[in-house]
Picture 1: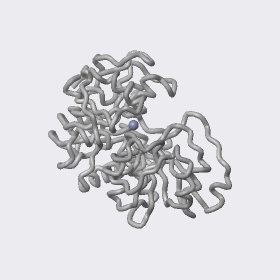
Picture 2: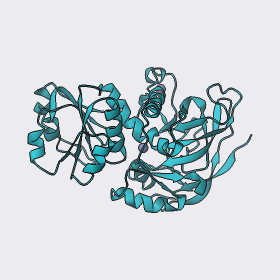
Picture 3: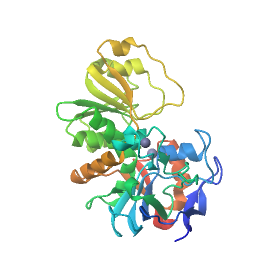
Picture 4: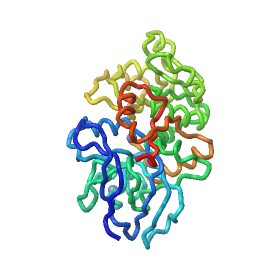
Length: 348
Ligand SMILES: [Zn+2]
Ligand SMILES: [Zn+2]
């Protein structure tokens, strides 16, 4: 089979609105699956990259790394999937497969760098195109199974937002008897609340204001505090075993670190573009950890999907047509979404 052109929504140049076009998909190779994409989530980083906020973007760019669909064709060497299987693709579609992290299933930390699902280049040097499209061809080892009982539309955002929160919550052992705070209640944060609560932790949301308090409690939080209220930091001093920050605005780190118990960890999954500063006594006193975490590997992403299916968890979504992508971008930038836009790719 030869290269096929498939319909997609792409940014033709940095900062240009996305428009309908076609992009090439490689032939289905020995170990590839062709996925009929059903839904694609809109991640904040799609907007950054389509607008070239991080520089060196490859255009035209088809964003989308929260992909849910159905296997439409399999290569002759494929063993993990069959036509008709429900599958997902997250933030990367390949890695070196040989380094210690790849061998451990932590491909997100591949020493040679993973191949991003879009705005990257594959091993042949061809640009990768993401999920705002009708089809994608992916090596079977970089797809995950979406369990029955988990609808594809609410599963799509789990492939980035879900795993980004699940991985640190598991690594730092959120669970019964643990007090966990999630900073920011957006696309990432709302999944953090759901997953941490399902893991059995006592969950607190720390948000700028109390505007989304009702939602936060409904999603599984036991407590909700406004960080624009100075007394919050006095009241909660020394409270948490784990704080996961999903916000990309610079935070007063010393103040947040003061909310941890001895041996507590403050983990960033959102990051401001500018360097931050802190007083190191904030971690020395109380033997605290300041850390970061990036998405998750393929085995852990599968574990997360199985966990979410078992606990009946999906993202809270607003389903849109492809023609609404540009408008959705504006709404994400003004935090006007509860809590993830998902594109119905049948409308592309
Ligand atoms: Zn993402
Ligand atoms: Zn590797």
